[in-house]
Length: 89
Image (cartoon, rainbow, N blue to C red; front, top):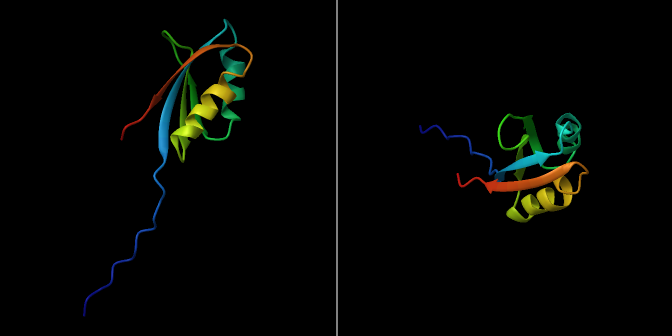
């Protein structure tokens, strides 16, 4: 008698993206808290280097990445610039 394997649940393919955020001096902590409140943002880290924060986004489609970056993060006072990278795997 063959044992039937349980079916794997279909999980929709999610789009992962990383948004590099440049902040005004002294604004990183406040910006991190504001960014973490945006739907679709999975995590945010204050980092040393050319940017001040790296934000991980997990959404259903690339258009949502644009909305989070352009309308959400760039709309927060204290954000100087962003660069967005969509994960290919």
